[in-house]
Image (cartoon, rainbow, N blue to C red):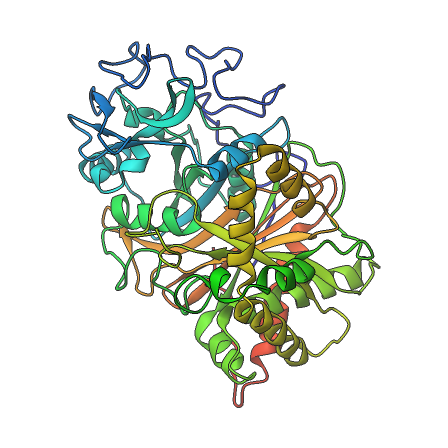
Length: 524
């Protein structure tokens, strides 16, 4: 089953009043150190910062459940360590990646990602807040907000972290049906996070059809990439932790660059080969290119993981990630065919996690540690197994060539000359560089619970960006792959049809297994 939220906000039966604590798209892009109209404090916080030191707390905020005041000052290493109720909260400067992500946020593009958890039962708001408060020290990044030290942007400990502002429950007179739920998810996803606080928020949807409930957890991408967000969820939310290190509990880790050491030093011409492969394709036209607005539409899909893994292995040792790209490609082919679109190649951007892979990444540092590669998804053939084999060949070349690591090294070098880095980022973000982003983050292999309530389904949503009207995010949980589609409804209508097309393509691919028997998609 798949559903979407379209332009009309009245779709579905789910009369939820979204809390004013979240904000809709601002008329002007929020910047570090500026104020949002109507906000009580600047986006960066209202504390009186001396150069490199903050002691005390900001003005009292509304609501209860304060974690309490914290003091901090720079350590000898140049970081700052929080004291008091938030042990281990370490201030750190924003990286070039953090600043680039913050700069993307404007009147039509939000900067956060989102996890949607459908629970098999209901949970109490106070119990959830209490549980998170008792474990918040395990994810110290969740206690950091935007600030300044010596005029430079830093992540600094929030002196008065208020969980009542971060874990909220909107008014809901009745239970949501499926259409109403996806409409609610889309409306919440459109809202901006409050930059005067740590950049995350959980909205609790207390009643869904069938006695279920849901959590919608937004985390700003500048604070955490997909791997880090999964680690945070394991640290503060799930009762049962995954059977692997956080973020690694999946069929095969998120797209990872193979090989030990630093390939940039081992292959002197590798950067040139990677640049040729990753260069924009002026002859390719994106079907999702256009001026996007602030509205979003959301669709959800699910696929059985084990059979998808088995059919992938049968294709010359392809990975689950290859199979995911095949499912997306086949879904796009079906959707474009139905909408009389061109069935040539569609170029996609594939994020690659570099956590714990590169020199200096000891202990998996927080925040963003991602790179990417691009490839053309073949849409010409109607045979999904043939398409899988072609995608496998393309990803193998990019992995063996260490494309993601070379691009990461290049952008880090260019960071020394900000204008060059900005130019390179604009080129790499052009719709002729890629049409859409497809990410795949492994989740827990075993079932998990939140405050004793089983998690029935887990979806990931990622924001689209200018001239890219569609984005696909995939996450796994306990033997199922969950697809989350985010789109601009003014440029891409009926995104729920595209989600169903992806499920149909997965079924066609799995049918290549001998004696394959299909199981119905997971009910959301």
